[in-house]
Structure formats: C-alpha cells, structure tokens
Length: 502
View 1: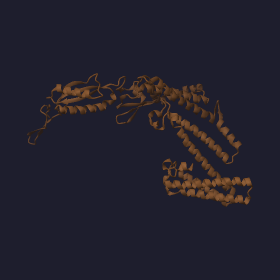
View 2 (view 1 turned 135 degrees about the horizontal axis):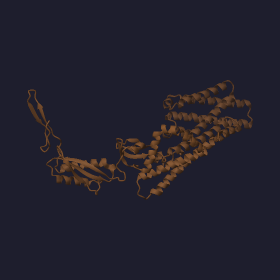
View 3 (view 1 turned 90 degrees about the horizontal axis):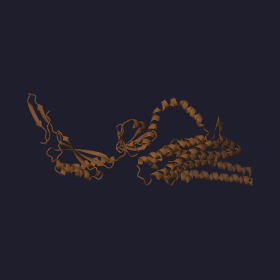
View 4 (view 1 turned 120 degrees about the horizontal axis):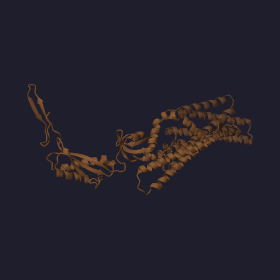
C-alpha cells in the first residue's frame, strides 16, 4: 500500500504530489512504523499467551512507546520540511502536521507521567486508525474509477470525451456516476466507521444498536426516513437511468440502422426517450421513499401561481425545447442564423440550444428565441444551397468569353451540383464595370464559406489566363489654387472606367 501510494520509483503513479526524495524518506518512515506496530502486536499476543512477567511487559511497552514517539517525531519533521511545504495542496500538510504533533506529544507526556499502557494503546491505535483511513481513501478512489468506466457509459475511457457521454438524453450520464459513486462511498464509510469503533474497543452490542438506528431510520409522519430506504431509492433511480440508456441504444439501432435518416431525427428520438426515462426513474425512486403524489399535487396546485410567475422564462424555454424536438424546425447538424449569430446546431437540450460558429465559438441560445424569433435554416428539408459569386469586368470584355470562363470554373468544382447547372447572370451596368454573378448550387450548405473562397481563387486565375481585367473605381480631382485658378489632377485610370466629377 505504501509503494502504491508514494511510488518512490514511479512519480507518474504517485498519489501524493511530492518529490522523489521526500517520497523515499516518507516511505522509509512509514515502513519502519508498520514494522514497529507488527512487533507490538506480536509482543501483546506473546505476553498474554505465555504469562510474561509484569516487569518485562512494562519494558516492552516502554520500548514500543518510545519508538512510536521517535517515529511520530520523524514524520512531523519530514512533513515540516521545505520540500513538502512547497508541495502542500489544499492545506493537507498543515492539519496532518498538527495531528501528528498532538498524537506524539500525548504519547510522550503519558509515557513520562507513567501511564505506559495508555501511551502504548494510543500509539498503536493511532497507527491502525491512520492505516484504516488510508485504506478507505484508496477504496474511495476505486469507487470513483468504477463509476466512470465503460460499465456505465458503454465506452472505453478514451471515448468518454464525446459529448454524448455528458448526458443520457435528458438525464445526464454524470448523474448515474455521481449516484453510483455516492452509494459506494456510503458503504465504505459505514464499514470503515464500524471497524474503527470496534478497533477502539467500543462494545459490539452498542455499535450494532447505533448501526441499526442509522440504517433503519426514523418515522416522520407517514414517511419513514432511513439510510436503507434512501440508498435503495437512489439505487432504483440510477437503475432506471441505466435501463433508459440501454433502451435508447436498442431503439436507435432497431429504428435507424440500415435506414436513411438524418442525425437530427435520431437525436430527437434519443433525447425524447431520455426525458421519459428520467421522469419515470425519478417517480419510481420517490415512490419507494413513500412520497404520496396526491399530496404533492395539492401542494403544487397551491404554489402553481407563484411558481408560474417566478419560473415563467424557464418553463417557456422548456416547452419550446419540447416543440423543437417534436416539430423539428431545426435539427442537430443544421446550419442556422438567428439573432445575429450563425453556425451549426451542436445540441438541443431542455432549456437551450448550442450552435458552433465558424470561429469555433459555442453560442447558447434559449429555446424560446428559436420558437418566437425568425430563424434562417440553410438545411431545413434540403441540404442543398445556392451560392452567388459577384464578378465585375471591364467594359471592353467579350461577355461570351467571360460567360464560358465562369461556367467552366463553376462546373469544375467538386462540391457544385451538375443539376441544376451553374448559371451566369448579367446583373447590370455599373459605374466602373459590367456586373455579373456566378450562381451555383451546392450539395451541402455547410460548405458555403469554403466553396466561395475556392471559386474566387479559381475565377481570379481563369480571368488572368483569359486576359480579362477587373477594373476599379476612378475619380478626377480638381484642386482650386489660392489665386482662384484651378488645377486639374487625374488619377491613373482605365479608359473604359466611368468617371465622376468632384
């Protein structure tokens, strides 16, 4: 256990954040403490078995107690060293040093005052108590690991980073882990405290009575509150969430595997089943506790007006989330624009919807805004989209050649649909150029930004190869001199460009 906790030769596996030298010294002190404790237990058994003379028994006690004091002092000095002072985290070193100092001081004072057996008892049980508490902490770490692995999530630990593992439809997968870890921690604490009380010589009958009182609880009206019922209710709730998880997977595989269906429909079905499973699990757990839902309905009716005013926004967003899941005006993977934000829908939850912009920013939008405000959905019912690329050319350009060049550029891109085919639209006669638009249809609206950039690069290269110029606006500037004369200055310009007088 010492090697696993301090790992003097393996810093990566060390549970305590200290250096290698400090870990070796602490491991040496703790190993010596355990050896002295084992010798103490052996002498206690031997003295009681062979009826050792009292003087020899006292000598054994003095030697062992002296060693306890020396080892406790060495431990305190090590904990107060500069290396551990720099490595202290969350104040654990301070209270540990204080506790060890008090124990060592009590043992030394009791020994000097002649209470040898008391000093020996406190020293021996302080070591066994520390070992038991450390074992309980290690079991707590094991419980945390068990509640986080693929037994619950259905994935390896490396796959836990996926967003789906953060929630179980509506009920969070994290809730299952918390409940599972809580139940295991409660069991660990109950067993540890029971062993601790017995180890400190409390009467077993009295300890058993305490356990029964804590486990079977007390009566509160018609409801009996006890640790037993609370643990079972939490277990029922967690089991319901686990069953919901398996039902979601089973339904998704049976209903959507091998069929053409978008991701949004699968997500809506999964989240809807999650809501239902979460509610049923909560009702089952509360019912096991003995909660009468008829009384709850009366109380809820009396408080409905006040709750309605106070939680109006939350209820509005919740109902709007259900509308979004049922009506499905937007789905996971859609590219939408709402309230000045534009991005891809990443998640639709009970209160809000998350979209991801082209800058990788997550924007959280309340569901009520998506129901009441105007929403532009580029992929609603059809992922194809039209893309317009404006192009201005010189007035001397042969428009037939230009049209062919633009159509060839549009048809050459892999993301552009062949049907409908690209179209070149003559937009009008501008001040400095002839205005055209290349109109293409894309397979996926989510590629609009990348495809638009690709087409502009290709158009620029094709126009350069075809010797077609793109003009820029020209201006003539007339500057009046101090004597009232006028100086005309013309900026360099294309003869085909339009002129404005200023």
